[in-house]
Amino acid sequence: QLQLVESGGDLVQPGGSLRLSCVASGFNLNSYAIGWFRQAPGKEREGVACISSNGSANYTDSVKGRFTASRDKSKNTMTVYLQMNSLKPEDTAVYSCAAEIRLFRQCVLFPQEYDYWGQGTQVTVSS
Image (tube, rainbow, N blue to C red; front, side, top):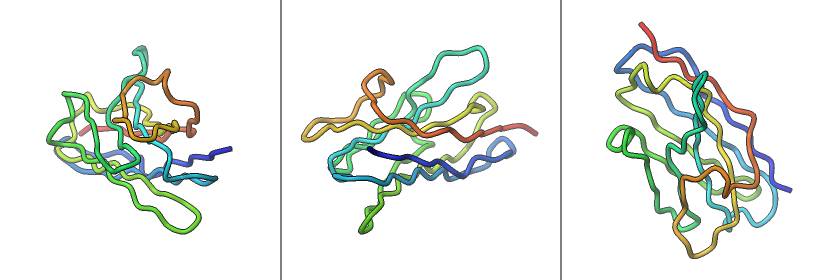
């Protein structure tokens, strides 16, 4: 069983930055691709970024050049970061991380592919 815990959400002004963290604990952590998803009120869940087991990342077009995903593996946990720069009001949403076993394949931004989910963290971009 894999457990995911997000943190780092906050209220930030437009143009500001935040770094979200997703701490994964469990077995075979190196086998998992991690995705970042967001859901705004009244909207469907949207894939924002993902990072594969080999460290390569994908981004949705609206965040390319502004968001960066990275991963850091320690002995018993893995932390995946989402650095968010030049934030816009339309980035406001609950951000969740998710995991799926995906060896030797590029990660994808489709939420239905992911098996484990964190509880989410609120990001609000407003002046």
